[in-house]
Length: 183
Image (cartoon, rainbow, N blue to C red; front, side, top):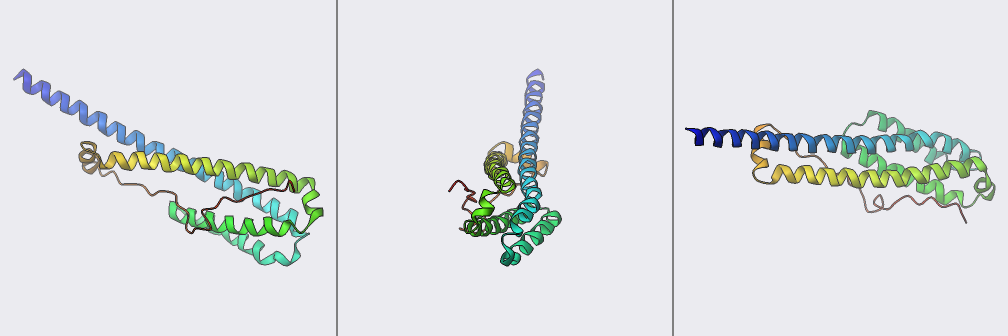
C-alpha cells in the first residue's frame, strides 16, 4: 500500500514539475516576443522623424514615404508573429531605399539631426536582431519540450500549442538593414 502511494506521489510531483516547466517556457516565449514587439515599435516610432528629416532633400521619393506610412498603419493592426515579420521585411526594404538614395545628398548626410536619427535607427536594428534571435531560441526550446517524452503527454493533456518562429519572408528581407553614413 505504501509503495503505491509513493509511486502516485512521485507521478503527481513529476506531472506538476513538467507542467510548470512548460508554463515557464511558454512565458519565456511571450516575454521574448514582447521584446521584439517593443524594438519594432521603437523603430516605427523613429521613422516619422527620420522621414521628416530626409523629406526636404528627397522630394521625388514620396512613394517610399507613403509606403512607410502605410506600413505603420498595418503594424498597428497586425497581431500575429507572421504578420509582423512580413511588415518588418517590407519596412526593411523601404529603409534600404531611403539609405541608398541618401548617399546622393551630401547636405543630408552632414545634418546633425539625420546623423543622430540614423545612429538611433542603427542601434534599434541591432536590438531587433538580438531580440529575434532570443525569441527564436525561446520558441525552439518551448516547441522542443512539446515534442519530447514525457512532457509531450502533459502538453497534450493541457492543450499547449507550438509557437511560430520569427522568419523573414524573402531572401532580400533576410538581409540586415545597413545604416552607414560614415562615408
